[in-house]
Length: 229
Image 1 (tube, rainbow, N blue to C red):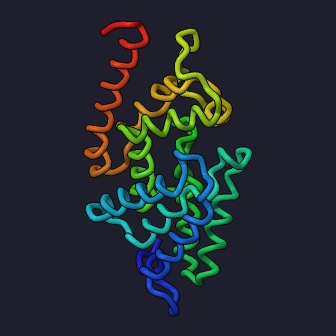
Image 2: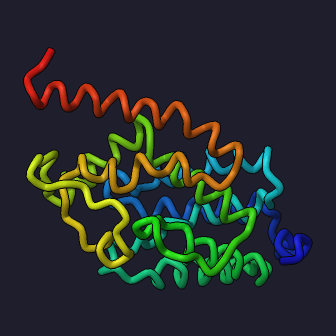
Image 3: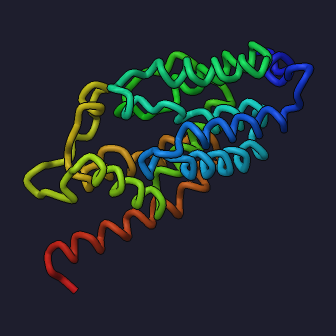
């Protein structure tokens, strides 16, 4: 995609004004969201994405917009419908007269960012998608990732752990989306896989400590589960 077309803004607003209005919109839309997918998740992803974008050949404007809008209507909270988020995000950007190339690019990032079991074949690639996807994945691991996993598990009424239910690694998209397994299984089905699925060198480096923290946490969890000090 032509870089100039991607970063071309509307004549009436600067990129800073557009991202500020987008942030305000997202805050309003997610004010009652589940704690692991709320405004603060979006804000963390934005910060991480902009940090990565400083070291990667990506458009900061598209990266920031996509980071802000990536969870505007998560399919997990919309009966599995993956089109709502794209439609809501692109409609909002068009209301600000953002360049159509940037609008379409953000839409495609949102459509391709999620894990979906880890085996889905993406039909779109860009430097900006790589950056925002890494940022989203980084917020899913480490101390924050652990907190988010258990928050969502509680939201869905799932068990913490059940030794009789084994992790199902390598699920297809439908299996992954319909799973109701205990939260600890999610570590093995997704979270521990993310370090090696980072797209950027910067993302890979940032993932190391977060990954190790999860391993330490799990070691302690199982000791306590077994009553071992």
